[in-house]
Amino acid sequence: MPFDWTAFWPQLAEAAKQTTSMVSFSLLFSALLGIPIGVILVVTRDGHILANRFVFTVLNSIINILRSIPFIILLVAIIPFTRLVVGTSIGTAAAIVPLVAYAAPYIGRLIENSLLEVDKGVIEAAQAMGATPWQIIWRFLIPEALSSLVLALTIATIGLIGASAMAGAVGGGGLGDLAITYGYQQFKTEIMLVTVALLVLFVQVLQTFGNILSKKIRRR
Amino acid sequence: MIVLENIRKIYGSGTEQVEALKSITLNVKKGEIYGVVGFSGAGKSSLIRCVNLLEKPASGKVLINGVDIQALKPSELRQQRKKIGMIFQQFNLLSSKTVFGNVAMPLMLDRRPGEEIKKKVHELLTFVGLEDKAGHYPEQLSGGQKQRVGIARALATNPSILLCDEATSALDPETTSSVLALLKKIRADYGITILMITHEMNVIRDICDRVAVLDDGRIVEEESVLNLFSNPKTDIAKNFVRTVLNDEIPVSIQSLINEQNQFHRIYRIVFKGEATSQPLLSTIAKKFRVDVNVLHGTITELQGVPFGNLVVDFTGTAEEVERAIFYIHQQQVWIKEVLPNAV
Image (cartoon, rainbow over all chains, first blue to last red; front, side):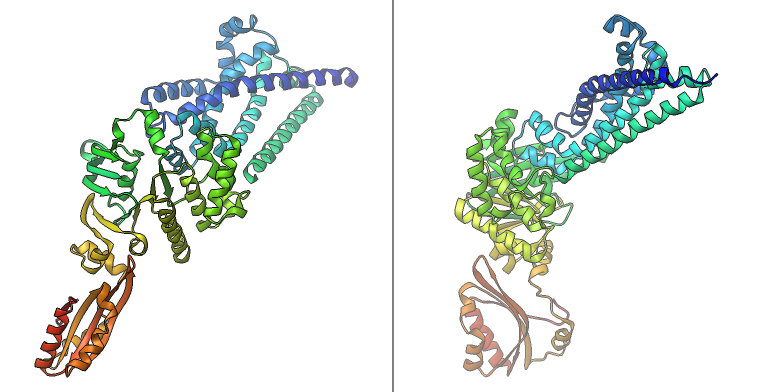
């Protein structure tokens, strides 16, 4: 039976739209959570501007626990919570909740790493200038790490594209879902190839864009 | 101006404990350039960081203009720190900001109006000679230029104290001199008190008024620069002085010393200030029947006062040499016979 490509293209476009919206919304929320997490993990360290062993240890452990749960399990385990937040556990909106639960701790770690690269001497200079902790974070730590933060967020976005494919399992739709249900489970190799090619294109474009932006910030 | 009283600083705990500062007491007067010299690990950087409490002393008092800054609330301490500028060995500039942005930073933190910031930054950059570099990024500057930016930034809030943490240690000798000249100008123009730590004795010689020698967390010697250079008491101070005033006798001359006899005697003469302007040696040659031969030595300037350290060979009868030596003693010049195998 020849494959009906005319019916497939709109389906692919719809799936691409779903992936884009899933990834962008979950990126937005996980960055909103993850960036402060990363900042807190850095500034509460021993010897840092807001050193607080309790906060650091607790947050660090929570991140580790969340990061060690495989996404596919997290996806299912979190269903009651998802229902509580969005009212349903099926659909694109519902997929965003587990995606955020997955990506926020990940982004937190990436941001932490980027911020730790900032020269300690710069922080010391900031303190010597009489900067408040808030000013040190906003005017010294983040601007100095910005180029590396952009790369970190690029990595997180690409990670989210991968995870969003699995989120298809809860009816989230998207390109990954398309590739699995039509291409893989129904042995329609062409569909799988086209969908995967589109995913590769997404990743390529994002990584290139991230690299250029990061370089631009560094060059400034 | 800056008073440290019995400052102790301890790192680590239990058996791993290291006492970096062991009861440091020092007093830096207003308008003074005070140097602390020591080898790495002597506790210099802990000491300078205790002055603006980047490091908290385990015990002891830090008084800035009479204010016990350890008793201040965090917000008051931040205000106090704005009155204490600091520059660093590695400059610690923001790589993401231009020269202008770096110098403007302390003023931005203070939420000063944009016009005022612009004016002040321009004034500061002109003062340090970088008015044409405002739009450059630190990575486009040389080490000396970066330190000038650091200095401009430190001066932005009109501090009364400037702390220099090995400020010239990453610079080549020529750049070091120009940065030191700038620090001198800062003191002359603004009357700022400068406390600097360094391991470079030439820095102490070139700009300090007083110097403390730090060894293993203790101040082992504290003197005016002139006195320390002309008469260092501890071995460590002698070693430091020797790094810039080489008074060690070369091997070739050492053999002459071993050969000296009663007609041929070698003395070390140390003179400072007025004494250097007198033609001492030629007077002796004329007055007494003694031949004078300078074997080795240096003449330098300390705090604007000439200072000389010479090894001289006197040839003549024992009697005439004795008379010449007696005469030198009367001129308030330090003189001592160099004995074989002595330094």
